[in-house]
Length: 100
Image (cartoon, rainbow, N blue to C red):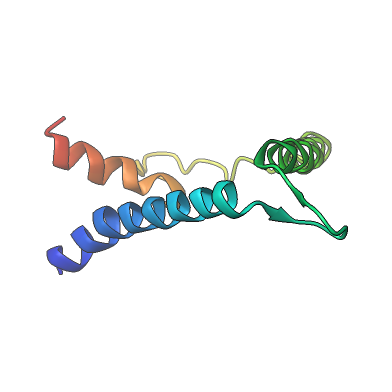
């Protein structure tokens, strides 16, 4: 089980980063295909992608600000719950690995 966990948390992100690097190199080397009869540079593509990502994050931020999520269930007197919400459980595993 520990080997599967190690592959999942170490090798897959390294593979993903390597594939992204290859993808960006191919974009830079071959150019970006557009609707026109020419290719555009990576800089033009990056500016468009950054603008689109900024709009998406702005929409998500406004949605989160306008419709906030509740903090959860009210506390039960005398009961202590130390298990965090599932998206931050990886921090506890990282603390165990690093010896904190």
